Length: 60
Image 1 (cartoon, rainbow, N blue to C red):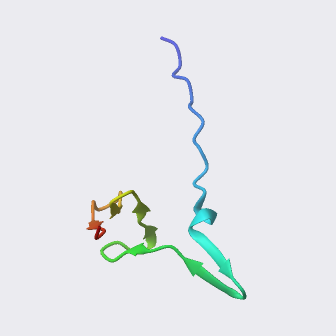
Image 2: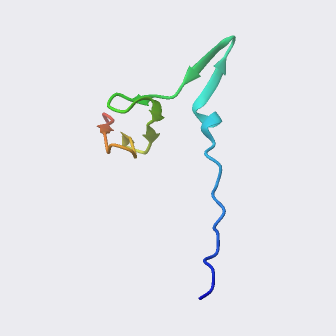
């Protein structure tokens, strides 16, 4: 039996969740259920946590 091929994983790109504003570092919104370690994904009409499935819908 042949060995399974190892797939290369894409790096997390966590640095894209932080922005510099002068001397302050601003973070993207975090999940209220999971805590400060989990960032929320921003979609067209909602904000979503992939870990606990928490969803906030944006007003139109």
